[in-house]
Length: 327
Image 1: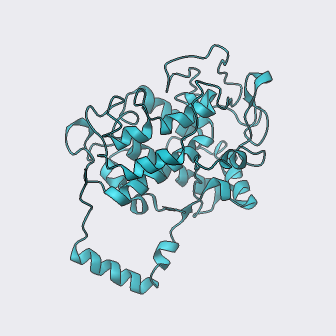
Image 2: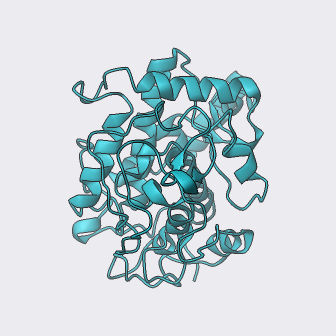
Image 3: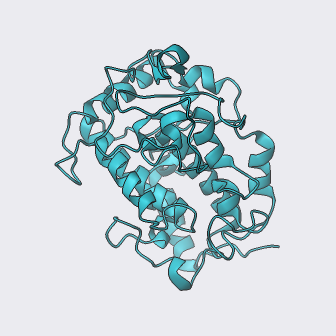
């Protein structure tokens, strides 16, 4: 199965040439802020990211001032999941989260004063990434089994990182089951690495299949039952029982709060979704956007839940929409 890639008009090609000539070739590309691999961040970059998120907890949201700049995103994610809004298990999954990340990055820049600050991404296929990311000077470690799986190390430890008011204490986002031995408590952030259903982190072979097997963006019935052999979106999202659980596998692997609708309570949510968005951008570069549904209730001009008149089509060009590129 092959898809035609977007073809630039002659005018667009001429404009691109002129812009490139004026900017010194690749300078215009290199000036675009990069989302970097989280495992390669410098100590200063890690410290800036942590300080920014802690600051966001105390800063009123520009989108909903009654909430903090961080908790707004937890609240929004809970509402998006509960409302069957098309933000999950539907074609809008990738566009919705791309706009979600764009807004989060805008708040990061406002909180830090660094207008080039970007989210890092977690490449879960790198076996060394877990140690690099879940370290005491970055996201903190696994939960403590003797303390109800609360995170007790790092800047997001219990007592230093309060949960948002719109808190989901049921781990039913991804598996419709509740682990009786892991009660979810709003007293602090909980993690339970690789304890649920022995679901591994996605590997390089799965990523290769995502990029090398020509699938349509999505396929009927455009939900969790879309055949992952035909639907790139459901292959990447991994809604049960698709048989491929790339996105969902990471939520389940981290466990506890990451298995709930209020999963953005865990800062690793944003590194995880930056990687999901990175993989979509790689797929787009190879296959374009022509196979995104163009009719029905999931079409590319249907406004995304809670994002005003922003449509999937407006998110297709990562650099134009989000103002970033990936390392």
